[in-house]
Length: 267
Image (cartoon, rainbow, N blue to C red; front, side):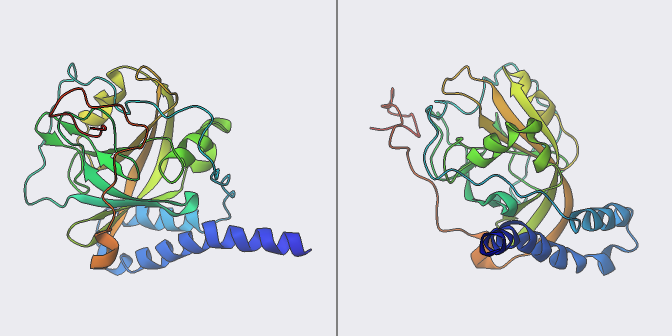
């Protein structure tokens, strides 16, 4: 009985309580959206997530047995990019949380000449002069991070069970620098993606979407995992919540820089 009580308490704090918090916040959106065409979708999403959900697998306390991939983003030179570019006045992503999986990371721009992705941060992809890190625009927001402890490892772990079915319906929160919290709901898990085709759909999106990516193996050529989420609503956030202190760091096992202009590598 004591063990059952402990399990229920952990379930409450890791899944039910975070979901309930977001639901209560989103309920504040309903009066303002009654006249809008999207009110039915928002209400349906709220009702869906108040149903019992499966408890996610716990995040391992140790690093994976295989090293994280050296590169998290496949080659993108051949991808034709269409659609609007992010403007200077748009709201840039600063933080991502997935309460049910314990993910909470600052978001930084993908630096130029990146040789190795940063640790302890998610990065938003920049395709040419088009940054995919502006939630709310008619384009995708594309975030990637290593499959490591305290990063995107829970996404990879969940995807390996029933192709990630337990992630469908989970909330994802993306904070922006104008103190807003964009709430998305996971709708799709795509495994074993390879080559530049991995980015083509997201790069050419013409509606607000959220794409998350991490590596499935230890090499540059390893396949990628993509998780797709659709927008639910936008909630005001505090300045402290939207401006995390962390900005990521060079990974301790990152390769030695091969040029003076390389980033994310050890010098």
